[in-house]
Image 1 (cartoon, rainbow, N blue to C red):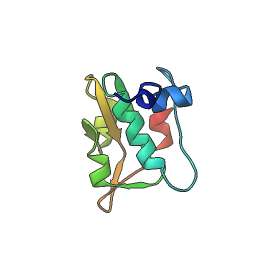
Image 2: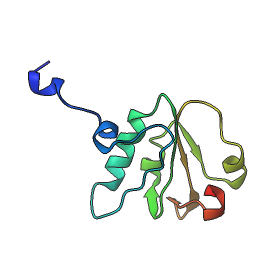
Image 3: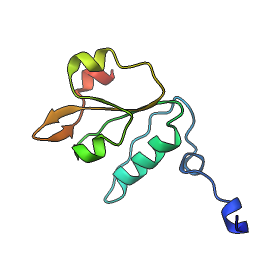
Image 4: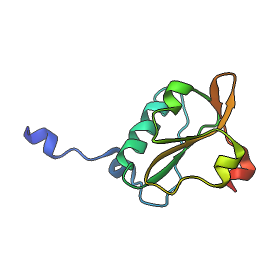
Length: 102
């Protein structure tokens, strides 16, 4: 491994993200890529990924588990991995209702 690569840290380390943190991204460009990169880093734990806008189903299916129905939100699978949740609208995944996250 080149010496420069040995000093690189993960995105979680660079942002100071630790277990139990709630993370949100805003701005223009790179949010979904950053979100999915973080989810992959934490895949060996249990990660919930959602959106405040709409995501293409191809992006939503990048997780290990996909929840699109209210009964699924109430009883998610207990397994480790990336859990993607949202409301299915017009072939896209939209934000979870605020009451679900409370």
